[in-house]
Amino acid sequence: MEVPEVPHYIPARPSTVDLDYADLPIIDLAKFSSLGGRAALAIQVRDAMTEHGFFYVINHGFTTSQSERIFDIANVPFEHVTTEEKQRYAGSMKQTGSYQGYKLRQYWHIDGGVQDQVENYNINREVTKREHPHALRPFLPEIAEFARHNHFNVLHPILRLLALGLELPEDTLVNCHGYDAVGESYVRFMKYYPRSDEEEAKTKNVWLKGHTDFGSVTILYSQPVAALQILTREGSWKWLKHIEDALVINAGDALEFLSGGFYPATIHRVVQPPEDQRQHTRLGVFYFVMPDDATKLVPLVDSPVLKRVGVKRRFEDDAAPTMEAWRKGRTAAYGQTELKPASEKGVEEEIIGGVVVKHYN
Image (cartoon, rainbow, N blue to C red; front, side):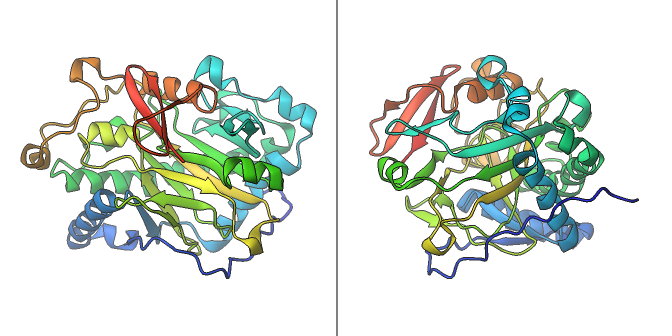
């Protein structure tokens, strides 16, 4: 198939600064096809999610050239669309509770009166759900195929491994993550821009406060600009290291709710890159995954694992939100509500649907 030409995006070189990197497991999906390999991977994934909440995936079916191509496409909505046209395709997150279209710069409040310097463009896995900027339209077939690849070749194997980790039938989580069901799983292209020294000082170099994602699983394509940090179970922030052609996987709220707290949503943040990358933009490519909108986020109590270790509930089962209600509440509120100081040091919180949501700084 002949594909349209796209200007090549040249990322920054990997940092040579000695950073305190998290030591995360690497999951090799090439082993998934055999029964023995799958059983071993299920243990690896279970331990990775319970101990770290983050892990890398390799051999996920996307080549180096395909990854480079999707980053080239990801840059199009930022560098090849006018400011005027971006405004026309801006999302209305606060009103609709849906990330579709642009999240323009300076929409989120970070800290000290400073607004963000990050732009993102969000595309539902059903790419024809809404209209897109002219420059992006030739690439929609490739973006649609990219969404399908992530859903079936990356997400579904991971969901099967997570279910096995709970000693449940393999398809338990797959069944509530249907590709054609009503839902909001989407591709996100995201670009961070360098900030002024004044903004860095006011926010203590934090670009996005520590938070959890609200879906079940987030798939991030590794890129070289160091800025992403995770909060370890021991309470320290560690950097994520770039691994060429790897994916970075983390757990979100919905997976925590469904797993009865066995797979906790991972707290992570974005900070100013190290000195040798500071003047570069940081381009990100994601597949944000959510269960089907109608899914009620109650623990999978049939799990033999949960029967042994117990269930950690954030709300009673009869008060559990659907995925639709949770994503809309989190989306509408993020970066828009006034956060209140919590009893924990460096933690702020808000209430969404009767559930306490924490932000870490």
